[in-house]
Image (tube, rainbow, N blue to C red; front, side, top):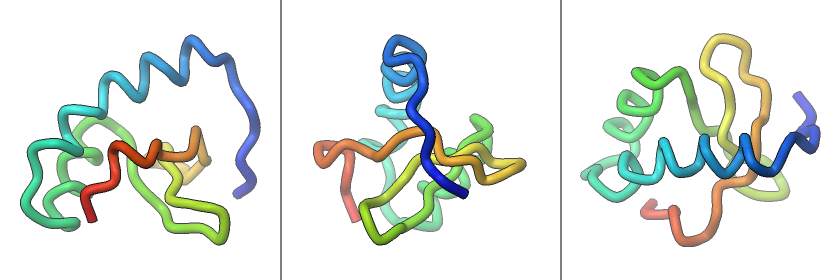
Length: 70
């Protein structure tokens, strides 16, 4: 799916919601499980790692570099 720009306030709130999950994980699999509980996922693309919705895989936003632990 293609990344479509969305409301910056909404994206900021979503990133604030998932930020703790990126900080407190020991492995990439654990991160995927934690994000899935919140209804999100991650996908590596040519551009960067993207935060996606879990059920449909729609790209929400690029994951900031400060989040990348793996």
